[in-house]
Image (cartoon, rainbow, N blue to C red; front, side):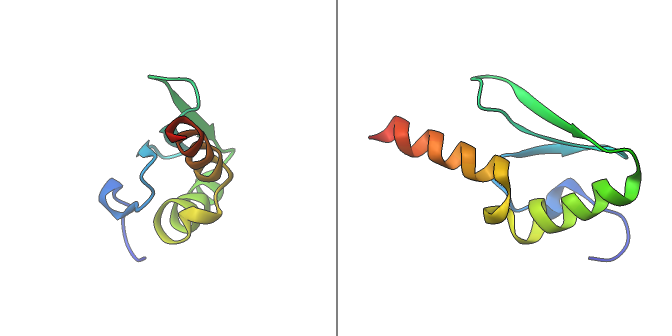
Length: 74
């Protein structure tokens, strides 16, 4: 992933947006979003690149939301 990070690069189905120091995702509470705020841009960029774009199935938020939807479907 080179250059500017764009929302369209995210593959996670629960990703909503990102800013220079945060990642915003769907939250467990219906009709809400959760924001992960980072002290610096580097930490946010790593989180976004690894867990939003490449390996979202390893993200704790993804797994929690996936479990929630599976339980609701049962």
